[in-house]
Length: 228
Length: 216
Image (tube, rainbow over all chains, first blue to last red):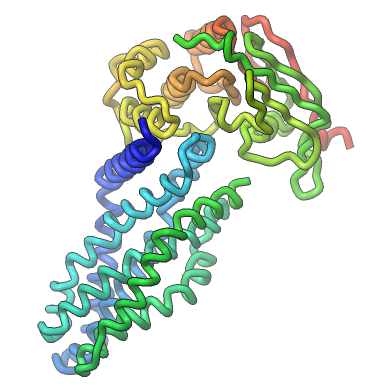
């Protein structure tokens, strides 16, 4: 077996395990969705129900709702693997930890964040977002949310050995999430005002490419530090 | 089954001590263990048995002392890539079935041999539970699943942390039998017990860890 095939089959084995796990914990998939629906519903109730005002706020509300709900599920990336000793087995195995973590992050995005992106057209309808802004919103989310998961995974890795690390996690994640939110929601706002919006998306895309390469390696190093 | 006699390892530990926040957990200790032998580490609760195993497995780094693992042609500074570690934590997922757990662990340990999984489960007394999620197994059965993982690892060295915990009499005899077979094929076994269980009916060396906090 060449090393490339070996790496691929390892990645596939980790993805298969994590997908099975998320399918068997369906409640965990429903939680971020319900949270985002709650935020958006409550927002419309708490502010004026005037379609024009809501449409102006819509990109920001949707971005914030998705960002916060992915923050909620961040802690779950390594928590159960840490508690049942699976993380120790991963550390001791000859498999490169960064590869396993990369698969873990991919499945986390697929199970906890992607359903929100899929539901975004519904959220956009709830907030009267003009239909020509749906494309920029979807593209900004498709580029921005994987970046959120990758950055979040590095921070979660730093706090993996700490009990009740939720507050620390939120404090550390906040400053790193701000630029993603500014560029992501900003692109949609720019599009609504008729400006060019692809520039902000390209910057997010550049960040995503860097994070895909570096975040699994950084997360693996952070896990080694926090466990030893 | 593999035979390790041609690939036997020698573990040498010299003046090994471990401190957590300046507080001594164990040490300094010296021992050597070679393939074909078992070493029983005993000591009271808190004497550092688990910490010793974690240091040997490479999960923790000791502050002083030396660990040398030599296999023909290779030397390592810990056992991380030459041992199978059975810890207090199960090391497998509660939501997955026995077979799914073992398939995944074989994949990450680069040792994919699906045809060996069912015989290994039968050997540890879990036949009939192949498709049962681990969360529906009892504590003792979870330990047995851990033993199946160790057995499937074909590792030249086993680190077993309290392997007798939660097991019934047949389970204890099973552990002893697995250890005898491992040493019989030239593998090494390092196991801990706090001494409440009968010493294993296996010929082995003994290392007694004193509680370093009680000494002071």
